[in-house]
Image (tube, rainbow, N blue to C red; front, side, top):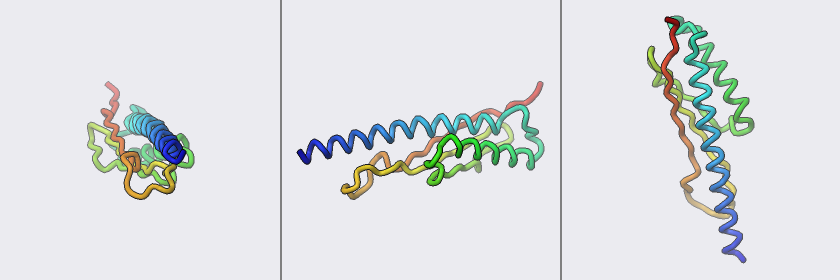
Length: 118
């Protein structure tokens, strides 16, 4: 019975991590697209910073409570590309298990070309 419960907990942990991985990837893509939008004046650093703040606020809304343990890194962005790295820790469901799981930490990177009006 103990082995069955351990298997169910592991399977549940894996499902939660897979769902979170998909969600974080989609949120990263959405945030990078918002920051690279043609409506943002990419020549004005203040406008770029404001667009990134708005994108982060939107991403935190999409992530819900998971946003409390999530970080957003825009430092690799250039004038041509918006690069967003989203890092988060997955919730731990296997309470009695000590040690690191593959699903503990998630990191997703989104790279989007800056949209410019032609």
